[in-house]
Amino acid sequence: MQPPQAALLGLVSPISESVLLAGVINPGLRDGVRPETNSPSELLLQNHALAVNPIDWKRRAFGIATPSFPLILGSDVAGTVVAVGEGVRKFRVGDRVLASGDGMVSGRMEQAGFQRYTVVGEAVAARVPKNVGWREAATVGTGLGTAVVGVFEVLGLPLEKDGDGGVNTGEGMLVWGAAGSVGSAAVQLARLAGVGKVFATASPTHHERVRKLGAVEVVDYRSETVVEEIVAAVEREGAKIRWVLDAVSEGDTFARVVEVLSRFEGEKKVAHLLPWPENVSKPADVEATRVNGGRIWGERKDLAAAVFNDRLEKWLETGEFVPSVPRVVEGGLEGLEEALNILRKGVSGEKVVVELEW
Image (cartoon, rainbow, N blue to C red; front, top):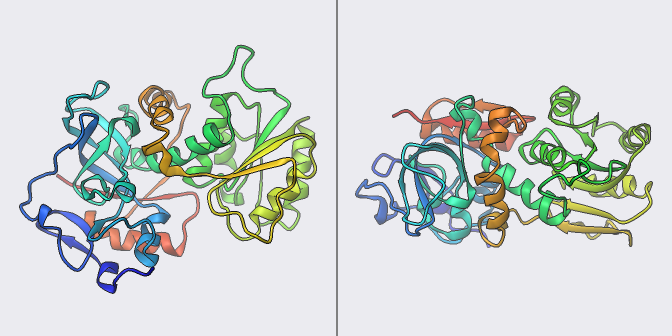
């Protein structure tokens, strides 16, 4: 159901220093006191950079993923730890951290991203090494979290390479839409999991970057012969496609993924971000499952901790995992209106970010 019109208005509160969607400001934020952690496993971050995701403008435009009003949008943050819950073991005050706040699931505004302070769960936080800036760090959280669920839970790839170097080297993975934050993360996670042959689609502008992330072949998704080009690339590499992560999941991507998979024998798995359309049949040998990225904050905190807490800092430091390309919009919190509009109009291969001054 469409929310009240007043709830569709974005405003910056000079009192709470957050971006709210509501006709009124939440009284709990009026006193200007920074929020507190409510759980022993939570951190409080002083934000230095915030990233915008498609779900942010869609929540405002269509009223989806809005547990209650008033609300604050945003999930992806990067900042300094200023307080920790008594149960937190992996972080301390002063750490540079990136994280994904789950305010859109919990309904707790202090867990939203578009504000100066955000409360985040320990499992979805990672220390940021010195070689990564705030703006780059802010691009990681939600895109990586969604890819983690897609690659490791839905597709069932191993989190660690096995003794002989990973999965069967003749088995390949296709990432449809590899230039975006979810797709680029999926390419890198597949490589880190030991998939020997990762194939991808992206616009030609991003082919070189996607190859550097780990794809052996990249095809223009807008090509009229995209299916034939993918199949030819896979055959040249002596592989077959066993796994697909469709990071676009719109228009004809479902049908084209099915057509690609029809060229290869054996059981296949597809992870898709949006609902499977009724007019596209699922072949008997294809297991297709929608990715529920929100599980990273709840049922799959184990996966979140294994990646964010235990591995991501090292990956970032060594360059094994590369953040998305940030596109910075000036103005701090007040720049978020422009940032949302830019994202709604469409961006390619970039993550829209705002930086906060202190």
